[in-house]
Structure formats: C-alpha cells, structure tokens
Image (cartoon, rainbow, N blue to C red):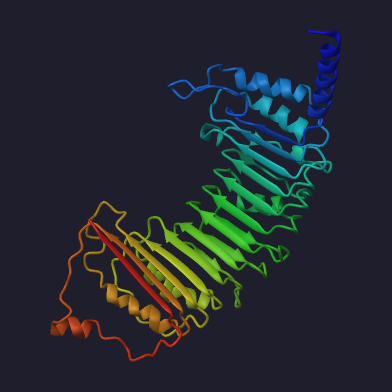
Length: 368
C-alpha cells in the first residue's frame, strides 16, 4: 500500500472509530453480531455474544445513544453482563429501550430499577421488557416521557405497575402479556393520554379498574375478569377472547352494554358456546361494527353441536345503529338443519325490526 493510501485509510479509520463511539442506535442480536447458529440452535461460540457486546460498548463513549435493542435467545449470557451493558447504554437522552430475554430468566433476573435513576429513564419514550422481574419502589420517579409500554412474561404486581407508571403522564399505549403476578390492574385518572390497553394471558388477573378518561381501545385475551370501567366508560373499540371460559358471545351481549355504553366496534372470538345467545333488554346504542369469530379450539367436537347460530340475531336487535356484521364459523362437524320445518321456523323467527343502518353483512363458514 502506498503512503498516500495508508494515510487515507488511517483517516477513514479514525473517522469511523470516532463516529462509532457516538453511534445512536445499538442493536445486539445473534444476527447483527454475526453469530452463526448450529443445528441445535445455539451460537457457534457460547461466549461470542458477550465478548462482542463487551468490545462494542468498551469502544462506545456512552454518549448520544437513542435506541438500545438487546435480544438474547440463549441462557449462557451472565445477567451481570446484561446489567453492565444497560448501565453503559441507558443514559440521559435515550428514547427506545428493548430487552428481550430467554424465557428461563423470567423468575431469576431482576432488572435493577436504579438503571433508570438520576434522570436516565426520563427520556425513554418506548420501553419493551420480556421474561424478567422488575420491582419499582414507592416513590419511583422515572419514565416521565414514556409513551408506549410493553411487558411480556414480566414478574410485576399491580402495585408495582402503578409505581412504574406513576409519573408517565405521556403514556398512550400499554400492553401486558403473561404477567402472572397481576391480580388487580388499576389504570389511574392521571393517565389522560392513555388510549390503548392490551391485556393478554395474565391468568391470575381478577379485576381491571379504569379511571383514565381517554381509554378508547381495549383488547382483552385470556380469562374472564371483573371490569370496573366507571359509569361513563370511554371505551369505543373492544376485542374479546376468553381462553378457557365458555360462552364469550353470551357474556358480551349481557355484560358489555352496561359496562361499555359508548362501544362502537366489537370483535369477539369464541372457542366454545354451550348456550344460545339470549335476548336482552340493554342495547349497544352506538355499536356500528360487529365481528364474531366462532371456532372449535376445544378437543371436544361437540362444543357447538347444540348451538343455534340464528340466535345471534339477538345482537342485531341489541344494536339499532349497526352498519357492519361479520360472522366467521370454523367448525369440525357441522350439521345442517332444514329451515322449512315448523319447529325450525318457530325457532328462527326474527323480530320485525328494520335495520336501516345495516350496510354490510358477511358470513363465512368452514366445516371440516
């Protein structure tokens, strides 16, 4: 190499090194670190992940980090190393933190809340944590800029979650999945920007209480819980799927008109309906979109055997301004009954309502 080329390479190397020391986006995964996978799914070098991340952060100034994304798919990484990486990268000004850990860490790794102290957590706008524990104390004064929170497989109690978001006045969306220590979830009044809540597979959860004034979209997947949403619930969009409970459709038509009086769109997924959809006196006065999905998820092929699908007309009677009705049925063995018999006609008689607002009706049926 000529002297000129050597000098040029040296300048480029120094420029690159300088830029890397302040690189704003740090993403550490097996793929980005160039770690190949063996047939058993493990990295080609057990210590490769730790060694490479340590070297990268050793050469980083720790200044100017805006996004940190750490994805660990194996258990060989030492939690102490993870703490060291977070300590180095979470500095004032960081906005996006994602920490995806192995499922085996769920009950073992406790994320130190001290990593967010001294103003280091107040610039975070997006926080995603999986498979760990976090125990915010009383008086936790961080996450003041947080807009979106995602917790999956995180050990945290209802009180600790309240501590975690106690100063998150900018929070707009919160998603909680498989947080098995949650028993009572309270959404406080001061979260007046929170508009979207997703709760899924939190199997010990018994009560969801909301006083946030602008929570318009709510998705609930898992076990049936008590909903305390206030006398004038703001929820307008609701997705519902019970994992082990029966009769989600009947629950929706009997409970939701009073719990969510301003509901405009409703999607219900049910894997088992043992009773027909009842007639009700309460109405969905604002419901415009209704999507019902019925599927045999149970090993028992008779979960819908006695269900009268025409009883779903009760929903039409309970929704006077409905514009769209979608019904999807996926059943293992469907028996088709004649609609010309006297008993059948009596059973399927529809009240003489004119659904003038109804613009779209879509019915799909798959039988295997």
